[in-house]
Image 1 (tube, helix red, strand yellow):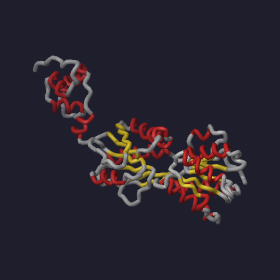
Image 2: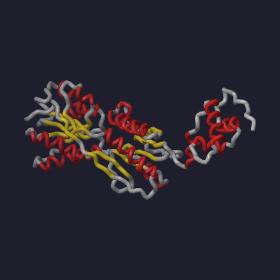
Image 3: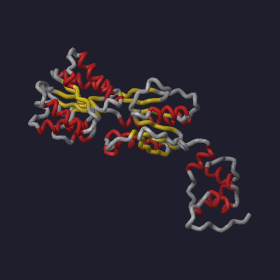
Image 4: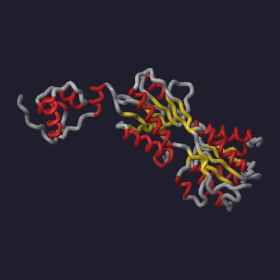
Length: 340
């Protein structure tokens, strides 16, 4: 069979071009690309030579259609302002992206506005980075039998794998530490309570106070949206109160650093006048005027475990058992707290 001339370089090379140049069928080219063992060696050589000569880039979607499987996973993150400056989001993307590379998985990042329906065509599985107003997207994916894993949210009422942080336990550890230093007037600057993480941290704060027989003063609880702007307002109100707190547990390091800045602006010394504990273990806490004591959450481990779990679900059958895990936190003691 004669080989035809190469297509014009101005035109994108297609699988049909490869088949014509190799003198074989499109099906044979597809089987070579997808490494089917049934292809005759002489045909395989012709196809590989044609691919090399044409510098053909096989379509990932075509490979998926041929094999019936997809190696693409989608990471769905609820959209919020400053997402690409968020330590939390960047750590998740770094951890998930690194393990995807190791496992030869393609990663598709989707910032969702929560209202639109996800396009899951060609996607082998989905990692949901928390569920904040987009539960319907998770339920829709599950209804389509798409393997799913939820991170940073322990989902009890759906048959879905989830890997979350023990936020309540971490908060209790932080408050117990402050109590152990002699503090009784302990405030809490909470994050956005629409998130499970913030709600659990508030729950842990209240539980620790109760366990230590310290009355809960609602005037010591400040609810924010996780922003530094609202953290600043909360810090000003807390410090200027009639009976100000001697210690504060803050729901994120970013907000805790803002609290530290406000306290210093108002003439307070850290930790002499106010002990502060954050949550995250953001490296920026080490660069503060006073190194921030914080609750370390294993974001990279959570990210990597989510990829491992999703990969397991993708290569197993539909009856594979799901996994629900709660990862422990660690209190990192630095310089921002002192005995009362």
